[in-house]
Amino acid sequence: MTDAGPEVPNAEVPAEDIHVESSADFAAVPDAFQRLWTPHRMVYIQDGQQPHKDDCPFCLAPSMDDEKALIVARGTHAYVLLNLYPYNSGHLLVCPYRHIATYDQATPEEVAEIGELTQIAMRVLTEVSHCDGFNIGMNQGRIAGAGIAEHLHQHIVPRWALDANFFPIIAGTKALPRLLGDVRKEIADGWPAPHTS
Image (cartoon, rainbow, N blue to C red; front, side, top):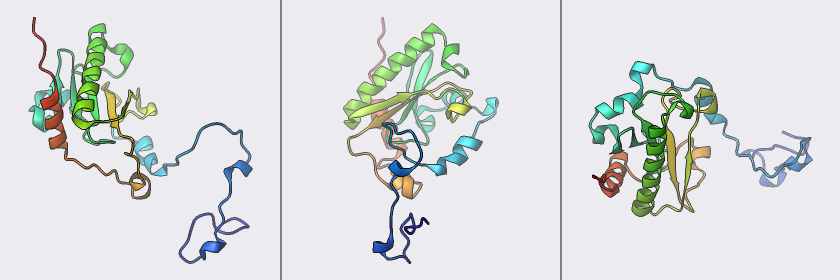
């Protein structure tokens, strides 16, 4: 509560008595950024879920059936699979087969194929899901938020003009309109056949 009343709406306080303080009045150096406070992510950030090397899901996935492992495409040095915990439907990961932790440890061949698979994934996702844009990136190391820090992986997250809503913040839940198996099949079916010389 502030001197003017509570900062957060409360069912016991009449709406006319609720006052919200403007952050412009606080001691700070203003900048152009908006802040989205997500304290529920602290458990993930602090504890993480780093598997033992022998249990690395990105090392185990290629030995499994594509459908079970959610793999949509396999290359020579890297492969593409759906994220088991997606931010959006069609959230893909591009992983080298080798168990390496950071991008600077990748060979030129791995880097080239990760890039090529990323481009193909963007084209396929655009075709099958009609997405409006992408977030693409790699979290390098546990401190940078890598869920599996010991095995390099690049995220490809399709985005739509109206894909943001209140659910993840208020309910701690991400609404995903399609099942992983259905999304995997659609992307795998849309993936171009490998070129042979």
